[in-house]
Image (tube, rainbow, N blue to C red; front, side, top):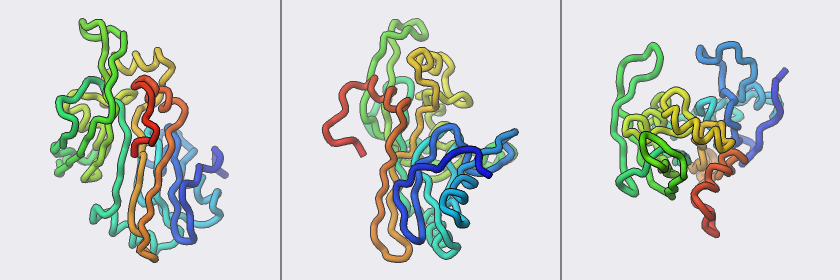
Length: 239
């Protein structure tokens, strides 16, 4: 029995699917789950009525594209593509401050999370999509500045985007573990309570046909409310 309802399907064929995971839902049971009983993997098995192989994880608080396979051969092929960095992954993030450059790379080793102290190379490419300045006092200034970023992780370390943003002091908004509490409170005052990280896009070659698959996940209403702070969106949505 699953706790919640079905997840929106963004792409599906007989071998694989991409769904949109909502913020607040864990992908799998883990030692971080506590007393949680509702997991995306369980919902998906019930939703599709068959075994599913989830190819990657998204943090509980992160929304967006989640890739899964319906058979072991497809899962193995997609797993090899993932490990070979042949799957394109774009995230949207909103952070505090305005980065000094419109595009930049954070190259900073990260450990594997709790109980995994060994650090490994980690790189994330960032691009500034828009900036805004809000009349919210912070750190002695009468206003607060924020940036809407596209993030493309080149590696897949534990909470990589969140920790890389902390490393450069452009903390992710809504991140209770690695963020800045003052700015998180600002957004809660605006009615935005979620962590503002969204797995926006996946692109890869279909392991059976070789066709290029590109999937875009829409943001939820709360994330959309945060994006509205940056002014009118362009006629053609940013990918």
